[in-house]
Image (tube, rainbow, N blue to C red; front, side):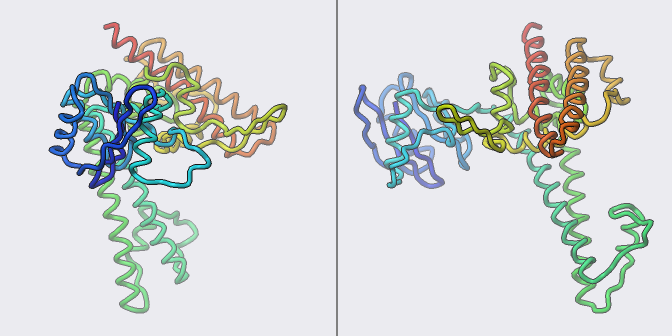
Length: 366
């Protein structure tokens, strides 16, 4: 067994031999030829097992090792065991510690997407980043207007067509101020154009995606608060729903479960862990807000009913009834709205997992 502590330019390598021996092999360059040469020195690729931590270098090393015939595991870095008394950190020690934990079976692996899935996920995340940039650009513009006391009429709501007409017609006292105002307006327009381009690319990518992925995206839209962008975000971030054995594992993956510190007779729970996938957590909380309204099928959902399996439609309707009832039950107990929506998002994951596994299982049968 071998472990690698991977960085942008170097890779520290350690191997575990026998039951007790772990030794450092040294440091190599993070280049394909250096990795190929290292595998040749370590012996038969078919009998070799290698691991490294997931990080900013992505899955390039995983695919290279797989092509060489080496079994490779990508490790979740947040779940690597750490000793509280260890105060020395070097690449060599990190590689040796990883090899020792890998041999003992104490490491948790992450799911590795294929090339097509990863490219689609990158596209969805780029759209999310563009939305964040647009929000920042809007904040800069609105705060700039506020600083100079520029306010539209009382009947003009922000970001409407009438509001934009007012903003584009503004004339500030000094030319420098007009230059800044124009720059803020152009930046908001630029981000809106980015989002439009990326959403068009996402639509085309969904149309050309594999049939099983299109089926999952369509089925997830049967849930309230889940439209096309949210559905493709869920599908790309989860990857495959069948890798989770039960709903509680999916809830932990999203980081929506409460933290806990219990000892002896004392049991104390705190805020949600937020240790999971932040992209999933964001869209789940956004979708959970819709369940404060009474159960209802919108026109889009009624049209989807014609192509969905009865089981998927039943799960989606059960989600509406259950989560709406849950929202008002907690609300009547004077729970803070933020906590209520977070609790609903956690339960919503279970229904999403049920729909995803149902679609994947039925697709596998056919």
